[in-house]
Length: 271
Image 1 (cartoon, rainbow, N blue to C red):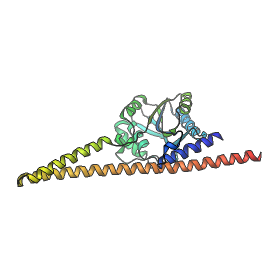
Image 2 (tube, helix red, strand yellow):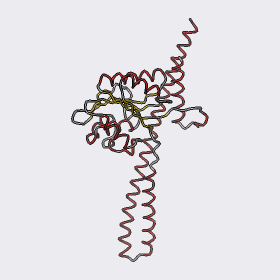
Image 3 (cartoon, rainbow, N blue to C red):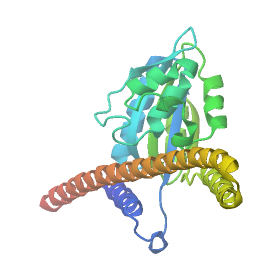
Image 4 (cartoon, rainbow, N blue to C red):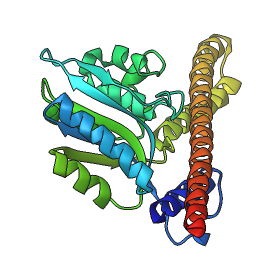
């Protein structure tokens, strides 16, 4: 019953966080992470998947989505299992789907698309909220004929997952998902706007021939700036959809955990 109460607390806390509730009022909060556990064979990976689900049922973690990925002899990758009824990509945005695609190397775009992300997005690290170094480490460890349990989770501490996975023989990798602010992209946009302002200033003073050439450059910059702003808008919308999907999932988890806790308490009172 204690595990059910903890599970409900984690779900409610994370829901409030995603919906913008002030975290200063809370004593602790979970960490949103990408988890990858590499196993020598599919049987062990399946054990790891079951252990992950059990940890969630115990209230130790929250699992958003997961899949088991296999590395083929030729170095390509495939989704070996996806028993999770929550659809990858549509539920958690693109982070998990993109990572799955990236694990497949150059051929990963198709794999990522099969996992539920938009075509071509698998190679876009800027959407994944994880670093290139993390992906490269995983590629080096996920050798041919090995399997990886890939999941997006929330956890207060690494201890439950680490001890359970290591006991099965898994090698654990994790990376906190960054709050992507796209600072570099913003800097590029600002630089282009500065260039445009200078060209416009020159355009105002130029002769007719020069004005035409300057206007062409201004138009080109306008197109590029508009494209960047539209891309940033799409990323913000995707992040909002991801947060909303997670919040809805966590509300459902919290409700189920409360119902189970109440039922257990009722049975105990009757006894």
